[in-house]
Image (cartoon, rainbow, N blue to C red; front, side, top):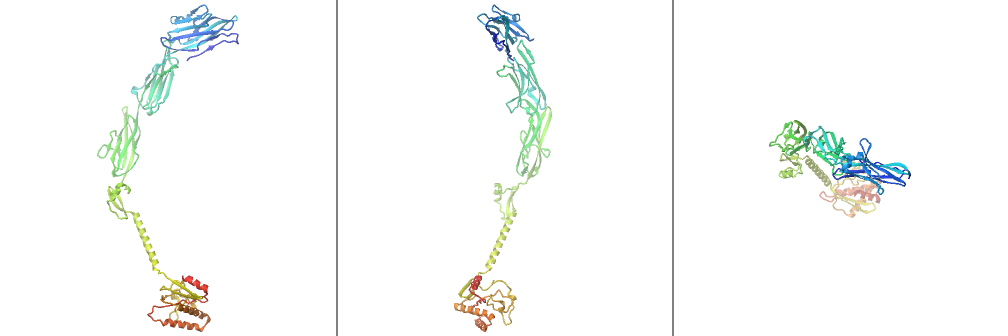
Length: 551
């Protein structure tokens, strides 16, 4: 490496001589190359130069004189005799302050450190000053030699020495070994070395480098490179590449695709076996530990990695793929298993195949069509049965409700008010009912002289010589009635109602008259008229309330 060293003596303006010389010179080793050592100085007031000497540093660390310059002559020193045939020297004088040594036909031995040494006098005092410079002879690094296994083939876990050697040139040459993964463009440095042998005369720097490397599966396809270079290698670095490396390894990571395990009868099984290995593995297929071969049932691809067959119910079981390769006379195996479950196909009613097949089959509305082994079958659909029973029960219940409603005939009520306290009520129904249930008619104690006629359902039961009021009474529908008759009957009813309370004899006469009138009607007559007597103490408000109840 170029080293610069300078020493200038400046003593606060008393001693002012300065020496100039390049601190570093780089020369390429060529037939017409030269080294120019120019030593220049500047003088202060009352300063004179006695002598100027150019020296070179030896391997022992001392300096030898190559040339000596004075204002009167310039000569080669004893140590510079080897330069006389291929160098020139130029001295200084009163008109020049430089001394020059030019070395032609540069050789490797010309590199090293040179020194310009100046003796001068300042005000009658002898002094000195110097300046160092380093010359580098640049030798080009050569392409290295890279040693590796034969044909770039190795086996996994093999430990291999990667050996590289080259003339790395000058200065400061070195070797480097790199690795590049097959999936990356970046090199990884495995090791480097500096110069182990240097031939100065021939400008040769020999370097050797050995890296011990353990190969794995990941190194399969990788590239290795050895490069040589030095400090001034600016162009493309000399290098040699090895690879891609072929790393042999046993099969591993064996797997069967797809991972599906459930099938239906009639489907096709397409099984593929994959495995990592180098060389590429071969595959063997087995069913329930019995080897499968190409046949009318099974079809195996040319590289034996794929198996095709149509599934039957008897194809339930274990399928195994065994991958194997051979390395160095040894066979290595790896396997993977999958268990297939084959079922009868359940028909999907939405599929077009089933629809087209079932369209030709007539099934009852409580049945559904299914496809089994290619044939359509009508089977009972439990949900259809449940729906049918539910609908039937709903219809029966509805019919029963309608029948009960229709069995009750409508009734019409006609209320007329002829004045305060005069109420006439007539019924068009054949039966008078629902005046409020208090007792059953059979509970009524009938008198000995005949049946009881209920003229006023609102009257006190005592009026009828009974213990309970008879609630339900059969009434015949009146056909004709007149306003006068109604008015008269209403008046009679009111009078009749008052008789039990007042003891008026006319009440019984009125009642007898009424009964005789009723008895005089002919049996064949369809005209009947019975009126409801007014309850006792009935006023206009009570009459309106009765009308409201009857409505």
